[in-house]
Length: 106
Length: 167
Image 1: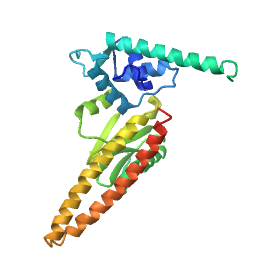
Image 2 (image 1 turned 60 degrees about the horizontal axis):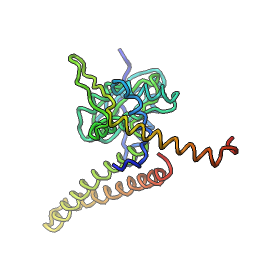
Image 3 (image 1 turned 120 degrees about the vertical axis):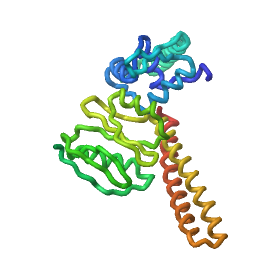
Image 4 (image 1 turned 60 degrees about the vertical axis):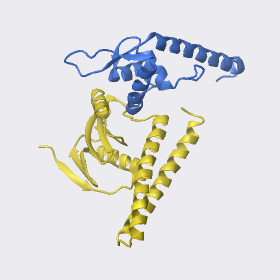
């Protein structure tokens, strides 16, 4: 994938939630907490995104703990780099916005 | 013993969002979906608004069902390729799809309609040529399926226009 493409909000919050190991429901809760309740990840979308992000190597599936059926995921170094790149891109967006509308914003 | 009832109701394939709205209205009235059959919906008594109900078309995928279970959604059953879930409303918003996934879901439905519609068309034409009396039924089915495809594509285009400005 072109690294200049923007991440979707779902991808962004999944990556941001996986700086420590979490399972599906944990990711949903963390995304909601990080965004002060604004971002509620859609279940089907999250399911699809998790397997896509694993294929890309941005996150990895941790070995399943015996006796538990819950799958836990964790951010990889590659995922960390992607996230940092996206934060830079978002910073640039904000700077453009402030530069143009800085004095006018309500 | 929980009070139960069964309702027989027909929805066309392009009315799946209307079906979902109806199931949630039933939940608001204190009837939670607990099982599905062909045009049949089983309900059990619940607190009004206790559950959010969602449905989608998806190929059989046990991994998906265990994922949904893990996030606290209850799998209620499958009717053909349609699967039904409910989740306590108190646990927060329960959505299956964002905009992109809604578009992808409509593509899945469209693909299924193409396959079934085309099969009916081929069978209908063959049976008509061989003067088999039932060919006309397949041709009617193919026409209906193509109409359904048009409705689904219409919904998809509306969302794709939305996607040009929103995520």
